[in-house]
Image 1 (cartoon, helix red, strand yellow):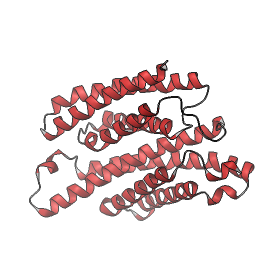
Image 2 (tube, one colour):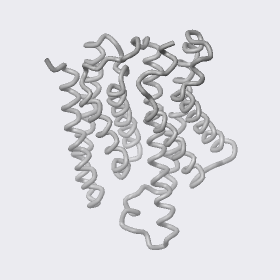
Image 3 (cartoon, helix red, strand yellow):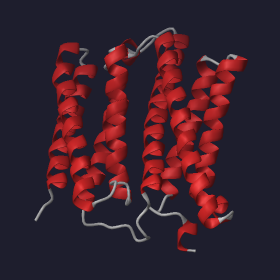
Image 4 (cartoon, one colour):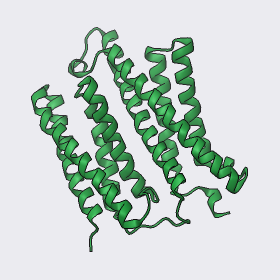
Length: 271
């Protein structure tokens, strides 16, 4: 019998798909009033998604970040939450063009995975599950930093061309993009730092130094290092604009690579 969590997630997925299509149409046609149904769909989808994650935790007796499918679902929810938080403050619909497609794809991966898949390694303890959740939330914020950076680079190039194309007029101002990117980066840095601390202390106590050679962890530390460099460069050196945007894109690419090489369990956990 299909679990309540899977049913709720699939309904949320339907709402995400509607929100995705409607948001793309409203931004392309420059009809801001048409974005409201997309926004409502994503808010309702996020609520149902949160209920699905809560139901999954109750059904399985554990935090639902044990498999790649579950982590995809969690990452989708966090990205939606981060977007809605930023939109509530800045009110820029064009951000949805970059965020909503990935939200939908990750939610789809989570919905197709169902609830039957169990981790092939021993169940992660709750503090390790917390570490995973912190990383996913941090990566969601880092992705929004990347989105703002890509939009910044696009808009700057359009300005330099002196003949901007239609999409230029749908983008937020450069100053606002810089502000959005930095605030999301600051949140990402804090969350990734907490996730690394939570995991590192426990992993060192249980496996000694073996965990340091795990490729996923090495990439996670590289992502943290890039995030630290961006925050340091912004606060101390004064990096802004295009240079900061390129660093943000590099950090997001590193985070994406961390996700790609992740097998659902670290290599040292079988030792």
